[in-house]
Image 1 (spheres, one colour):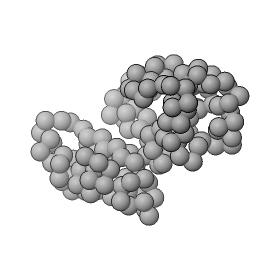
Image 2 (image 1 turned 120 degrees about the vertical axis):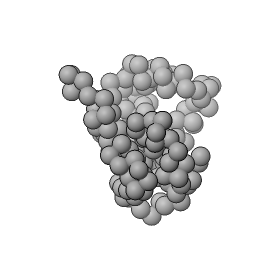
Image 3 (image 1 turned 90 degrees about the horizontal axis):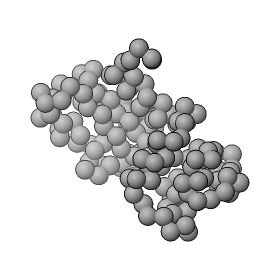
Image 4 (image 1 turned 180 degrees about the vertical axis):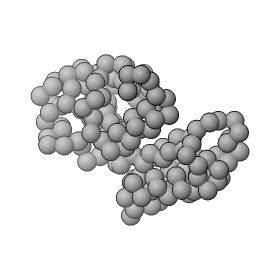
Length: 156
């Protein structure tokens, strides 16, 4: 499903999985969802409400990435700089005071410049090394809260 269909129809698609799965997490980008005029938190609330009415009740969560998943990658980190094959100074220059306005386009630009192929291996390697505790992205923080609620440990 593409983002507009996820936003509009995920509750229909997921209806048949209620007996098979104990929880559902719906994730999509705000950009391209067809509802860019709404705030990410409002989109999440709408999706969670529709899922709840469809039987998922407290077993569901929606994450709307704003602007997109690649925003989570952009940390002032020596690890990120190394994986992008750029200097830490260049990374700070790109970041300026905040994350890039279009994080996906910026990431793809650097990949092209450095001859890096887009792959899940890039994200996996980064996730294994980067300390995401400093990430302040709203959707990422909610993602952590949801996982900690659904899968509590004694360390929480």
